[in-house]
Length: 622
Image 1 (cartoon, rainbow, N blue to C red):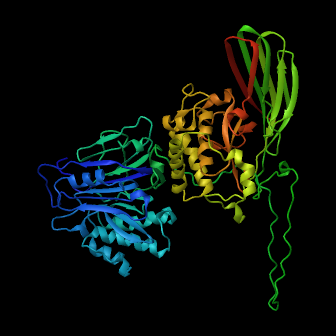
Image 2: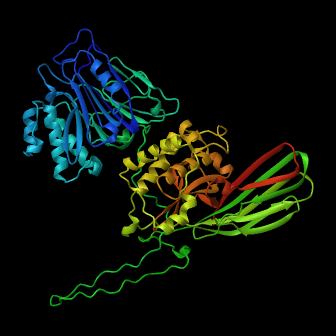
Image 3: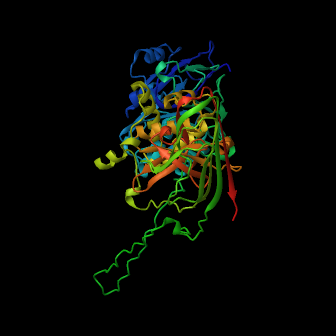
């Protein structure tokens, strides 16, 4: 590649970041373009963009000074254009273009050439606010897109229907080479035209052990600022770099990114999902009590007063009595036999020990325990009770000497299918931040306090949590689904690399762990967003549906969050799913210590301990 004419780079980070960008200028440039550059970003994530350009530069010294001298060079979105101006062009014709619109600055970049006459015919909005400052076809395309957004009376890209947005770009496609990038400071849109002469690539960069330095024949960029160690980025480029997995875009493809992740991909069905697609539906495992429907009687022509019958509420005492969904679909239960065996062995005799067992599945409106038994190989003193979290507890004291101890719990459990939550009631259309009454916050306080961590770690995790909120437009359910799927896709299931003392921040930094670690991280992120969250221990019947089949041979952990006017709902980040009829609930609490299946204290004897756990789950067909 002897020339770097019209190369573009677009960055979308999950939180504030300061990349270092360097350009490589050829010794003998060709073509009609100058060796200029343009760089734009949103300092501190503000609505106002900062744009630096030099249409006649022969190096990037000025750009390097900007990046090194300005403390404000931190943003979640960056646009960079190399050789974006033809000879004789001024700043008005040099990209990236910026325009204040709908209370914020918008940025735009374009590779290629479009028919200006056709563009002027397409851009029919003659508003003085949308008049071009320069002479380029690119700026006309920019103004056309802004006019389309103005016509539907919205103020951000996230408020535009994805298909509608794609349609606007497709209208520009027949006019020439339409390789386009557009942003409102939060959402980044990239489109590759079908008549392009160039390519466009994208990659997702995420910790840990990521490549911090990327080089190509045209440019380099690096993420070397210590503050950006844990940043995740989605990068678009007209040239592939030496490191990373750069996926080529397809002609006619449009990708929408927000906070370091892809939120929509017009060609997702043609590509491997290495990217982080966001959920578009709400959980469907939730329970709702149906409310009676009514229709006002239609008045006769001569009537002036409309009589509306009173609303009738159907009170369902036992939620299990609901056997069909509102559209008539049957709700069937699933039946499981669960055997949980825990064996302890010691190289010295134990003379006195005390134990706590939380092994009996909970019996509530979601599941029914038809049979449960607990056998313990040593005789002892037993106390059964319900703890403050509603868990069935057995406190067991053994005063006789033993070298081995076996505890076996057997249960038969019905897991009921429930209709989806009804979010038609206005108070259930929740968005973040959540508003709690003082007494609610007092009641939920144990589930709202994040783990005690250094302030800097909590600040980092808060930034990470807010990236999910912002790319989901502050919608509660979409944010929770996004966190759930992101942990499943971005984090590696690695038994043995963590311990009971592993903190949520360590899981976040290493991007690895087991179900308990993923649950702890989810809980911490939720609580930092003021969403009550608790730890749930139980079992999962994997069948052949889940990647982490090992969880069917041991106890499993997931998260339950409290949704206003809905209740506790489960999310399983280990398997990337919402909790449904594959999950058998046993114990819950503020954290894993409140829900540990077995625990105890040896008061005398013992020595070295060996522990084995075996869980068997069989579905009973009836």
